[in-house]
Length: 111
Image 1: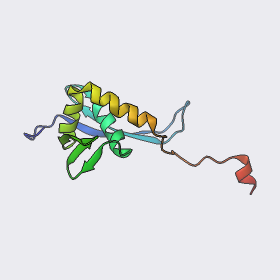
Image 2: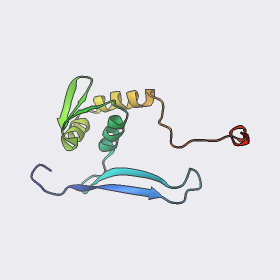
Image 3: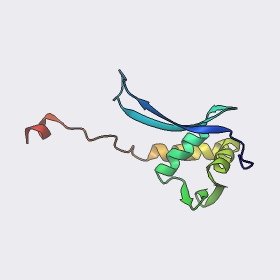
């Protein structure tokens, strides 16, 4: 909040044991006290990580349109403009996923 009031916190979660996916993965997201997990904030984080949303200083922009100064303002912009969120998600999905870890095959182990 611009007034200095705490409205939530950034949370880092580490999955130690998992039966359906690789263990020891980590996730980081915002929890807003009034709303719960900030879905728009997670979309914004993924877009910044994949260079779909450009970050210049504290300003964030998408396709030459400034969406906010700082992540809180950009998240509020995305919350009020769901059509922009849909465009960002489409661009994120169009890019290949980043590699999580190097997979080895038996042929690689034989070398």
